[in-house]
Image (tube, rainbow over all chains, first blue to last red):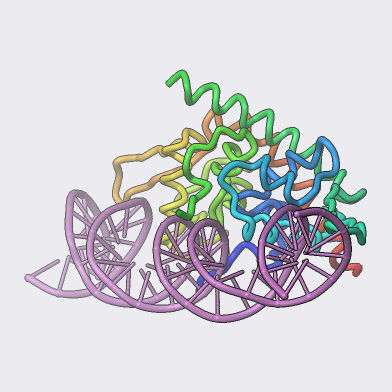
Length: 111
Length: 111
DNA sequence: ATCTGTACTGACAAATTAGTCAGTCGATTT
DNA sequence: AAATCGACTGACTAATTTGTCAGTACAGAT
């Protein structure tokens, strides 16, 4: 029986990774770490992502308490996503991840 | 065209996550962070993992330079895996991930 | 009345990842 | 000579995740 990392695991590493797990979640969080953005802005700013995946990931991140969805009841509708207070605690971790990743990419390009 | 995170991405976060991406890689690294282990020891120490997945993940981590495989040409064969010098640079990152994950699990269990 | 833009859904197909099952190989014990 | 052990492979199936395609709803502009 295949097991996805989405299932709640007792392993803290898996628990954290499951939050960020998803083809585009890292990138989405990275974009939003610079400030709130509208759905369509995010869409434009992440080349290659489909609207479907963007929204699915956003919803999961909201469900997990990492993002907040602000809706302004206006026309045209304007929805903004931002990193929640809890989500902010994730940023230092993402920063470490990013630092390591940057160095890793550098090494790969030299090899 | 679905895109896996395994493809080399220019995003440093994705680059790092792709290393740890795989149902059991976090756990494997966590076990090995306490010292080298034999294949069968690892297998026993990770409940639920199949031999196939263990070996696949080990091979990927070796390919990515995170682990080293030591083979003693003896009978019965004795193979040990350990974290490489490069892999050691990943440990602080995993530590941050783990700290956050631990807190996250705590919150989840309270809710 | 129709068209547009924004945010979003549902149903489904394709790709990717994980898991199952049955081997192999070489040396060694029975 | 057959059975065993540890590490591993190959071929295949099943589950999960991504992506495609076509909508919906709402309000304002044309």
